[in-house]
Length: 451
Image 1 (tube, rainbow, N blue to C red):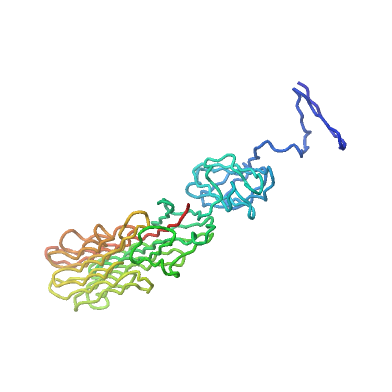
Image 2 (cartoon, rainbow, N blue to C red):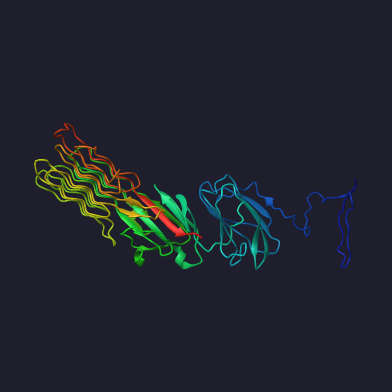
């Protein structure tokens, strides 16, 4: 086999230059460059520059994209016939932190306007620009259904689907990142549920965490009675940005029956904040025996006369995020009020029993009906039982049971915002202190139309 070396050739208009023949090799000299030979349908992979943040791609290049620390965007170059770009999931993280591919200006991808999202583990994509009708066309992709999207594309939290809706659930702090918005403005209005942490029990039951929900008109499900969706101030229209999510923790129960329970912490999504549930009252004179205000108020205590429960819906919002705690009762059994719930006030204590916690409310925002934000039951010192928790927080209620009797006092269930059950001082038949229990942590859920 022979080799032909060409050092220099003058351009001759109208002539044809043939280099090499069957069995020969055409080789450029060291340091030479080439133009006009065209591409072979492949890219030059940029292995020395792993991408970890938003960048603009160049024609003829392939990129390994590392989204371990968070999703980002690949901006495509201006399209010209035959232009080619490739991307590849660097370390199998596209499923948790997606990669967004955005065309230049109003150019299309696979015939659709807008961006596409790569959210499959290990996904790779090669696209070639054809013309103004189709724009960039996928020629190799693990999911050929990716087209220009007319719906929201987002990441963050635990993602599930229900019909044509996508649901992001946050049980702890996180970030809801909107990678692209919908072409139709109505589809950028998201449904949301924001529940704060429940208050810890004192002698009175802890109040439930604030419960705030707004249902978008484009996401069909059965909302709670507290749906604020019909009112424009309660609805959230998202834009392309990152939204920090705060999920409130439940407040600790009292360290002794004479102390108040601690209020729960705030949960937040965008402009919506829900207040933590108020702690249950302790034993003694006011203000120790007064329930704490919050999303729902903590139950009141007693000793020097009956004491009121804490105020709910504090700070005030519409629809209200919770209700007042029940009052304590001064008498031989020393009974305390139940914490307020999202759906009802905490029940006042009676001469013989602690007051049950206020009921929570149910919503199907996740695709199935779940009741949350019930108040904790108030306690009773002597024999019999304390109040049961309001449905929607811990076991069968916020704190299920105040101190004394059976079943034993219990905490609010995690991620329900339920109030903790109230504890009690020594009595008959319990010779030792029963401490109030912690409130349940909150939750944030976001739902929107994605197809």
